[in-house]
Image 1: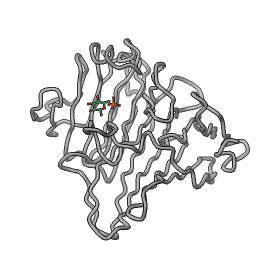
Image 2: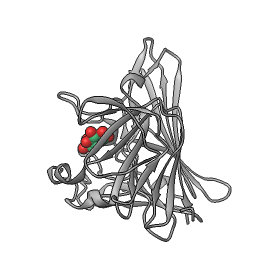
Image 3: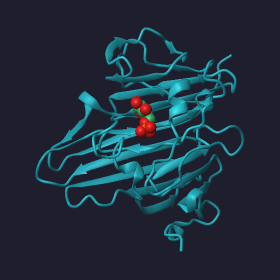
Length: 289
Ligand code: BG6
């Protein structure tokens, strides 16, 4: 039996066996279609009911209990990046989360609440996602223990663009970043970041909204956030794409990641009893004339 069935809402939320036989919820609201896996509490699809997808999903992705999904919104916690002898980007994205609530909101949006299991008595980790004309995500961590809790978190959002050569990321001008490929720090000089090579940057002290301009699809993908001081901009480009087994060789042409979280010098430390919330809202706007 599908463990998500008890959270079905007729006409809005349906439990399905999705790719790899993984349990997931298919969501239909007046404003969006979405698919959310229990594995990783992973929003794999979200966007308007008609038209091109907003989130990118790799055709080569694994869908397996011990592997992350390559696309959508992987939840990165409790560490970002590789770690010796441990899963890259933390364990949250390869854990089956507990779905504790599905709610139909006035107006037709759907809200899901997931909790991360296996956390003993030291922390409570909750992922709240509201699906409608916008995608609203909250990652809430409470320190229930008796000593300080330090972690990194990130919504590793994969966004679909029609042509990486024409797409731009806006909203980071003047922000200091570490180029992870060079290991050096720079200040962003451009109003609009364009992609011509592998790009892997951690921007710090970011609080403003960003947007991805897609002149081919005539749309802006807008990202607003709070409780986040780090923004990662990533595209693997040709060679890295070829090295990634779960990513098609040409897929770098149709995606980019703009990730919102708290990492490196902005890792979060919670004293006993404290709670933090990382919140991101993504929506679409028409491309200005
Ligand atoms: C990005 C990192 O956030 O994630 C990159 O900045 C990394 O360095 C990318 O390559 C993908 O990571 P993974 O573990 O999903 O292959």
